[in-house]
Image 1 (cartoon, rainbow, N blue to C red):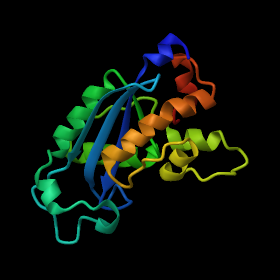
Image 2: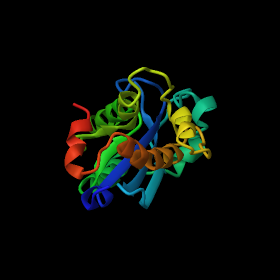
Image 3: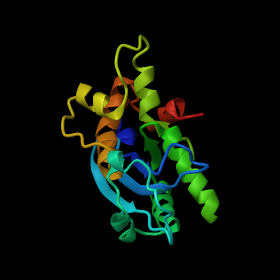
Image 4: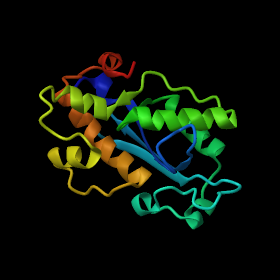
Length: 191
């Protein structure tokens, strides 16, 4: 791994949401892990998203994410959460597992609250993993992918926990894809 990739900073992001559609659903939780290309985790951030009002039944699949209204009362506003993400993205490349999903929600929330969120050349570990498996021999969901790479402590459906697992997978996937220099990142970025 070249020095430049080892010191490249990545903001690995995960969201928990009320559903699957950014147009009609909302973010409940945001997790961010800043990791260097050599796998060193620099910092992490997680928050629930506090809203002025949640309509009854609007927390989505509680049986999956486990988030309650009590959790949300201790959160920050969506604007504050997006401010934190924007700060990290000034010096880090956006990464997520199934990035199209997370980007959809982040961009929709930013548009709704008038936040100037800017994300350039995001990297998707799901897309990267699938590109490394042309015969489609393996599952690529986060849990199965982590287990395949020897990461066994994989909690489910918590934004920070999922971001940590993705951050641990990122250097392994980059190495397997022979990405050895930061200049190669644009070749694996989402278009």
